[in-house]
Length: 177
Ligand SMILES: CC(C)(COP(=O)(O)OP(=O)(O)OC[C@H]1O[C@@H](n2cnc3c(N)ncnc32)[C@H](O)[C@@H]1OP(=O)(O)O)[C@@H](O)C(=O)NCCC(=O)NCCS
Image (tube, rainbow, N blue to C red; front, side):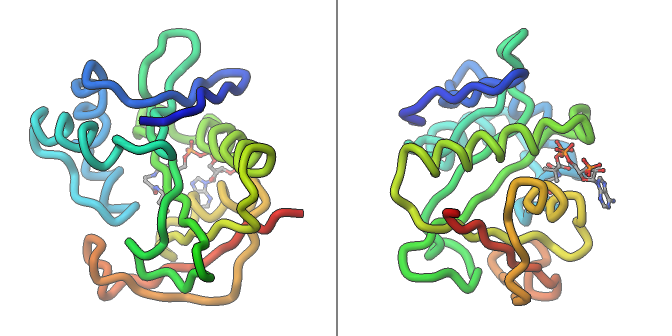
């Protein structure tokens, strides 16, 4: 589980717990969320619990929760790029994130990603991070650019993602200044 607790003015980035399963299901069963990031909507509470026990159960995946209520509103993390089809450099991790639709366009993802980058900057020696977004999901690109990611000029597809064989992904990179 996430080793570090990260704080921003409005958010806490903490490890996911099994008690979050119902909140996760409520947000991740929304068909407007997962497919924009390339994963299918959750179809049962059990599936959400399974994701907490597996996909989210590592040291670099965090629940994004409101500090005021400890309610999960999304997820963020980074991990090996061998799991995706981005044109990553050797050992360059990929960043991923999502926010539940009720919380969109309030600056939460930007706040969480800026916090993650600060953590990577000060607590690791990673020289860079890579990420990408479907070209029909410009809000995600906007979040990355606000946090210092720069378009590489490259585009790719990823057939392992929802409809990924036919959807262009715009590639961006953050480099340690
Ligand atoms: C993309 C996503 C993470 C953004 O989260 P968020 O908390 O709403 O993001 P923020 O509020 O911090 O910033 C959103 C920015 O995108 C902009 N934006 C929103 N919709 C947009 C659109 N259709 N076109 C262009 N920009 C858009 C907002 O205006 C804002 O930019 P601004 O601060 O310059 O005004 C969220 O919509 C989401 O989770 N979507 C589904 C899953 C997903 O796409 N994950 C990322 C996969 S790469």
